[in-house]
Amino acid sequence: MSTDVTAKTPAPAPSGKGGGAGNGGLWGLVLEGLRRNMRQYGMLIALGLIVTLFAVWTDGDLLLPRNVSNLVLQNSHILILAIGMMLVIIAGHIDLSVGSLTAFVGALAAVLMVKNDMPWPLAVALCLVIGAVSGAVQGFLIAYGGIPSFIVTLAGMLIFRGLTEIYLEGQTLGPFPEGEQKIGNGFLPEVGPNTNYHNLTLLLGFVLIAAVLLQEVRDRRRQKSFSLDVLPRNLFLLKLVAVTAAILTVTLLLASYKGTPIVLLVLGVLVVGYSYVMRNAVFGRHIYAIGGNLPAAKLSGVKDKKVTFAVFLNMGMLAALAGLVVAARLNAASPKAGLNFELEAIASAFIGGASMSGGVGTVLGAIIGGLVLGVLNNGMNLLSVGTDWQQVIKGLALLAAVGFDVWNKRKVGS
Image 1 (cartoon, rainbow, N blue to C red):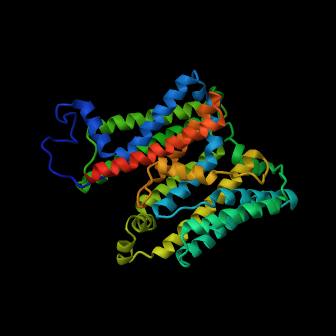
Image 2 (cartoon, one colour):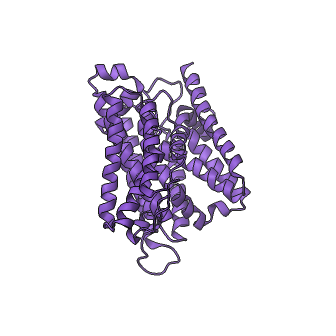
């Protein structure tokens, strides 16, 4: 996890060298770090509290290895959509069509694989291309046609939903080939000696811990080399310990069941790749620029139309991937698939720190927002909370997240 950085300003007390940060000691450092990075850490703390509460209320059932694995499988498609939606919202737009496009791609995959016996790798590649083309058409109308994204994607939602009904003729179609099923339900194979744990999952977990710690140390050194403000050393070490503990806990839980779901590897690649693009690539900085201040971005030479077009093309491709994952998990394509997926993705982005005005948000924030919703859904199901009250609670969570964002911006502005 990365931290927001700001220009260093003179302070009456030294920081960054050790444990002294005024009279508050380590606790004062923690509070100061949270205050400076409230947007980033707020939802992460909320996720931790929600997990703790539901773990207590369900007598530990929430954190059973099998339930943690199911939590990943059940919410993987929303997390994939949330990544793309975060980019769309950062650019200052919205996409209401992703749920219907997800269903349409699932229906198309079923027609290709089940009815026409097309090899599943070829069908998967073709579905991703069709998803990208669908997103590109919408992006062209928005970027070059000047039609608001709300209107274009609302029309897309209706069109793709209708095409789904047409392709499936109102019926559920399946089953899928075994290779396609593994995308949504498969796990990494067992390797090595019998250790009562999934060895490959343990290895991946330790590699991930090492990579994250190395990246955090490198980021801190780079920020200090540019005379940017960094977390005090004690608070930075505390952060590393917390990150290590979290990754290790999830690794052990997954390794004690069936191991790492294949879709979790797909998610990991997406998170790493898109995080790099948004933080380090010119394209990512241009997305932030057009969402934060479009007139200034244009004056700076940013080709806003090309960026907007590419953002929606990317969203279409990720929606197609989510459609393949959903179809594989259900082992069938249904005319009713994808209902409210767009709302879940949008909620995940806003809960994860996106701003209504655009220009703000992170890929990791989208994942955290999606996990907040996923844990709420899973925990309430374990407690046998009715679907009516589940909708109310999730709506309140979204309202609280957006309200927190508004309050935080007003506080910073004052």
